[in-house]
View 1 (cartoon, helix red, strand yellow):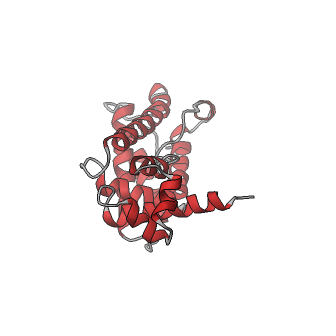
View 2 (cartoon, rainbow, N blue to C red):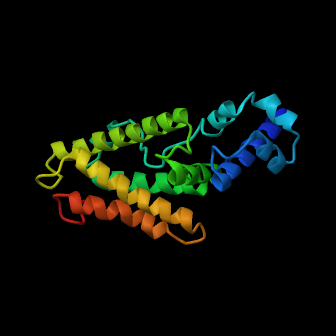
Length: 205
């Protein structure tokens, strides 16, 4: 059973995330969070000793939407690793955007990444998450590369960068218009990149 303290903490985290998306991370104060959550400032400080701790807690379990994980066995066993990768990417993107907290985290990241608005520690963590996701994509694409399934002249890292760029564009579009039905775009973004990169016929890619 969730305790009252746990419920309060969850409400404060949601309020902080909404405030970050609305005001920016640096402009948001603990007082803003308290007012938004309808709690006293003391309640915020009881759970989070300072703003650094609050920011860390908000993004602590963030999942990068394009991180397919580091398990390669299923791709090595597949006759169509590019097709499998396409489907996994699509599902990862949908999972992220259907989760309200993950979607709001990505909204903040897309809006402020690479700017002084994000604390340095958070920026460093986001960089680690994105590089890890890129590495996982590259590892899977390397399986296809070793089988001669990528077009001549393309490297796994080239294709991984294109995948991230295309998928990030669709996610950013969703952030601009959350009500838009973009499921088809989620599917088409990895599909078009991987078909363009594949040395196989379209139905095999």
